[in-house]
Length: 408
Image (tube, rainbow, N blue to C red; front, side, top):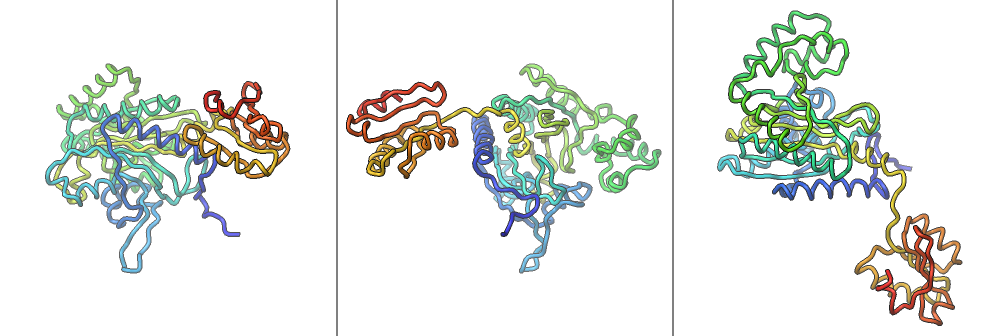
C-alpha cells in the first residue's frame, strides 16, 4: 500500500468540512473589507524567498523544499504566501502605477520540519495582502478583519502588537542592539547566526536561556522616529476606539525579515499551550527588495490547521443536518430517486439505493448524522404517503407525498 508522505495529510469528511468552514468564513469577511481573490503558483524560484523571507529566518535556513528542476532552475515549494503575491504584483507592473490592490488567498504551503499537532509539512494558510496604502488606518483595518474572523468562528484570542520602525529608526536601533548582544555570552547556535544576519531576530528566540540574556535589551519603542511613533500611537488609539483588546510586546518581531512598522500576532490557548494562530504586519520595503518600485504593503496569514484543531475540540456534539431518504422495497427505489431530485433544490439529501429493513435504514441515517428520516414501504406507497421521523426530537408521523415539501 502506498501511503501519504510524512507530514502530509488528506482532508476528507469532518476535516474537509472544517476546512471549508474556516475558508468560507475568512472569504466572507475579507470580501466585506473590499478584498478579492488572487491565486499564485505553489512552485517559485528559490531566490524569491531568500530575498524576501531572509537568510536569517528558520524557513530559509532549515525548512524549504528546494530542488533543481530539469531546466536547471533552483526552485522550491512556497513556504509562505506573501512573497509570491508581491512577486505577482510587481510582475503585472502594478507597482509602477502604485496601484491599490486588496487581495486574499488560501492554499497549501510547505516547510520541512518535524510534524506535530497543528503543524504539518504541507499545511494551509489563509492570508490577505493590501498594496498601495500608506495609512495606518489600513493596518488597523487588517487587524479588525482578523478579529472579526475569530469572532465569527467563536475562537478566543489575545492580540499582541509592536512597531518595528522604518529604515531610518531601525538602523539606529540595530546599532544599539548589536552593542548590547555583543556584551552577552552563550547564545544558542540559531541566535549566533541571527546576530550576524539580522540581529532583531534574536528577540524572537524561544530558548529560555536566550530570553534571560536579552531581558534588559534596548526597547524598540524608545528608538522610533517621530513618524513611526505617531503611527504606532494612532494604531493603538484605533484599536481602543473599536473595542479590540491588545498588549504591546517589545519582543514581537515576527519570524520574517521583511516587516517594518506595525507587527501583530493573535494568540490562542484553546489547543493546549499558548500558540500564534495568525499574524502579520506592514512590509513597505519588501516590494523594493524584489526589484519593484518603492511602495506600501500590509497583510496577515492564518494557520488553517490550528484553527481547525480548535474548532474540532469545541464541537464534541455535532448538529444534525440533512435528510436521509430510503425505501424498504426495491420496487420503490425509482420513486425515492425522483423525489430526491426534487428535494435537493432546497435541502441536503442523503439517499440509499438499497432496500433494507427500517431499523437498518435508521442506523445508517444516524451514522450520516441526518436530521430528518424519510422512508417509503408498501403501506406508505399504497396510501401515497411517506414515513417521517425527526432524529433530534424523535417525532414521527406519516405525511402525504403531495404535502411533503410544506411539512419539511
